[in-house]
Length: 241
Image (cartoon, helix red, strand yellow):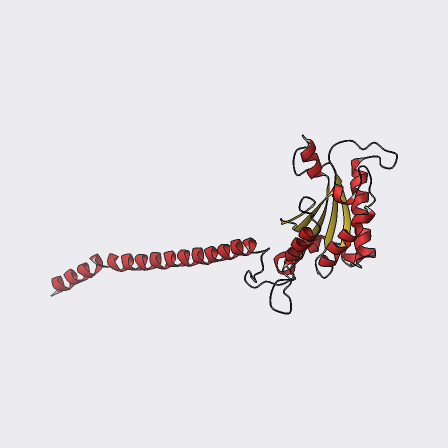
């Protein structure tokens, strides 16, 4: 009798590894299910982001998840009362560029800073001058009116090429770029009535070229004024009001 009981106990102990094996398989299955779920969510988010960036400038509504604050993608696409995006900034800029044949003078893009409108220097200024051309002041005002309702901070950035400035008014390209940006800001504030607390002027001179200054064409691209509608992530770097 004792012998029989010992045999049964040994048999039970010898088969206990099956329980451990079963538990391990179950845990592995749960682990891979969790991994698959996470990867699927990230993939969906990525597809939403990619689709949103691709649709930033067209006339359709698109939202990336639920987020607080005024993101640049939310703010750029201002939906009109008729439920369309006919009043989006990109759409209005396209109409303005086409109406005044500014295809080679005004461009726009989205980068890490926000929504950037680039104005070729020859559109606004004479060579070596920081005064906005009187005949182009109205164009600048029209652009400002498109941006006026934006809640974001706006930064106006001046850039030059690397050809040294040589006149009695400016001592350096840096000074020229700052004064150009400042004159644009003054028009946006005084004529468009933008909030002066949410707009600033910055001059980078020749030190932030977008292309090498190795040809007349490239130097012309580097001479510009950028109007940047700042991404809301940058608001925390602005001085508190």
